Image (cartoon, rainbow, N blue to C red; front, side, top):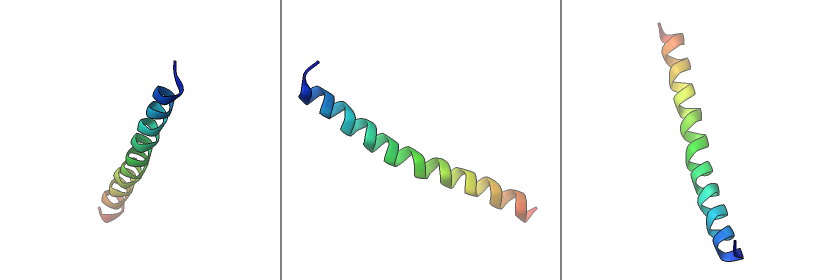
Length: 38
């Protein structure tokens, strides 16, 4: 495995992580809001 493909994979993984983490936190916040509003 060459360095360029490793860097490509690392950048894709970090971008996916940056998108996934805030989205899962928002989802959890929405669930908490629904529970407290009932």
